[in-house]
Length: 120
Image (cartoon, rainbow, N blue to C red; front, side):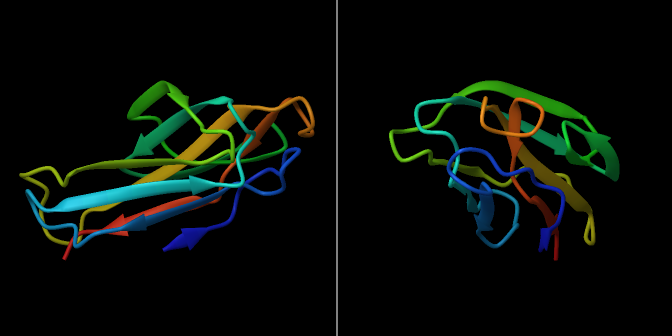
């Protein structure tokens, strides 16, 4: 489920989308588009929805995991694929959002929409 909270940069509002069944061991993909070309992004992953003011937008996930240095391509995109983790109970909500330095953004960072994934 897409959630608000992003901040537009020079390429517009970055869009984070996800695909996959959220079943343990099955492949899932997070895809970002409209990011700053050739920037490095930070993926924020949380088990709760924080919605804290951040860099002119909202930091949607609580910060349970922060993955820095993810390289965006020349179109400002990245796709990350992995197996969905085991051990998450049914109806667990996981929140994702990406942020990247972008001097054209309000506070120097562009941010994607938030994304909520709920296990079946």
